[in-house]
Amino acid sequence: MNPELFSLKTGNTAEFQRRLLEKSLAMRAQAYQSQIKAKLLTQAIMQIENSKKNLQSLNDTLANEIAARKQVEEKIRYMAGHDNLTGLPNRTLFKDRLETAQNTAIRNKKKLAIMFIDLDGFKAVNDTFGHKAGDLLLQEIAQRLEAAVRKADTVARVGGDEFIVLLNGIECSCDAELVAKKILLSLGQPICLTDNTAKVGASIGISIFPDHGDNTEKLITYADDAMYGIKKSGKNAYAFHVAAC
Image 1 (cartoon, one colour):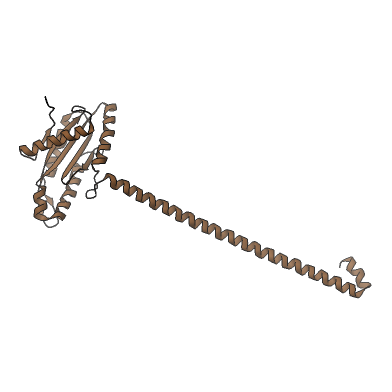
Image 2: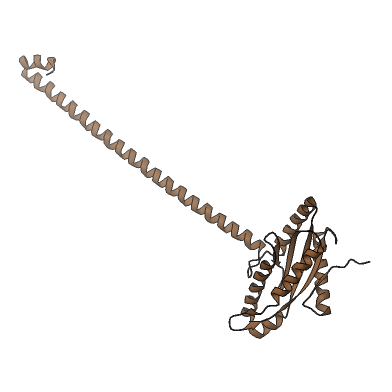
C-alpha cells in the first residue's frame, strides 16, 4: 500500500477513503484511456489495411484498364495494316515493308522482286456460287500464296482479287521466276468450297529492284502493268516488266 495512504488510514479515516476513491477513479480512468487508445489503434490499423486493400483494388483496376487499352490500340494498329478477310498485310503495310526491304537489299547487295497477282476466273466463281464462296476462295488463295514463299517474304492483299508479293534478298530474276511458276502451279489446283469445287488461275506481273528502279510506287506500278499485259495476252502466266526504250 502507498505509504501516504497507510498513514492516512491510521489517522483520518474520511481522508483515507477520499484518497482511496480518487486513486481508484484515477486507475479506472487510466484503464479506460488504455482501452480507448487500444480501440482507436485497432480502428486505425483496420483503416490502414482497408486503405491498402482499396489501393490494391484500384491498382488492379487501373492495370486492367491499361492492358485493355493496349489491346484495343494493338487491334487498331493491326486492323490499319491488315486485310479483314484474309488477315494478310494491306497495301499500306506492304509499302512500308518494301521500303525497309529496299534499304536492307542495298546493304546486303541483293535484289528484290515485286509480284503483282490478279486471279483469273474469280468473278465467275463469285457470280456462280455467291459472295460467301468467293470469300472462302480468297482465304484459300491467301494461304496458298503464303505457303509458296518464305517466311521472310510478304504476301499482301491489295484489292478484291488482287495480291502482291515481296520476295526479299534474291540473287537474280531467275529466283522470282521459280516462285512465279510455283504460285501458278499451286493456285491452279482445285479449291474445295462449302458445297462446290472451284478452279482459278492467276496473271502475274514482276518488277525487280534495283534493275527496274528504286521508286516504291513505280516498282509496284511496273509489276501491275506487266500483270495487265498477261491479262490481255492469254492469262494464267507471268511476265517481267520491260523497260521502255
